[in-house]
Each structure stands twice: as structure tokens, then as C-alpha cells.
Image (cartoon, rainbow, N blue to C red; front, side, top):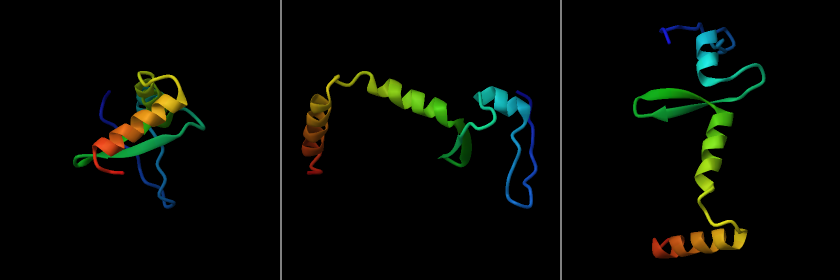
Length: 81
């Protein structure tokens, strides 16, 4: 992707250039997230972040009870509760 820019409007809004929208896969009505990483602000698609979070949970035990028991053990082990 070539470097591109956007102007901040008088209402503090920006328009995402087409290359950026295509790169992160967003369109009208989609939500984006701004994340601070080191000394940068990164723009991500909210739906992609939710998908990645859900993928991370697929390795947990399937039942709510097992999930809660696992967290309780972890919190106890780390001295939080």
C-alpha cells in the first residue's frame, strides 16, 4: 500500500482513503478501533478484532462451569483472590 493521507475536518473527522478501507476490510457502517502500540496508533477493524478474540477462546473447555473453574484456579494461583 502506498502512503496516503487524510485531512481532519472542522468536526475532527477524517475520511479513510480507499486503499486503507480495502486493506483493513471496512465499508460503510463498519466500526474501527484505534489501538496504541508503543509510540504508534494502529487502526483495526472491530469485526476482525472480535473474530481474533473468539478464535482465542476456542481452545478453552467447552462448558461455562469448566471455564469459570479454570479462571477461579488461575486467580487463586496468582494470589488475586
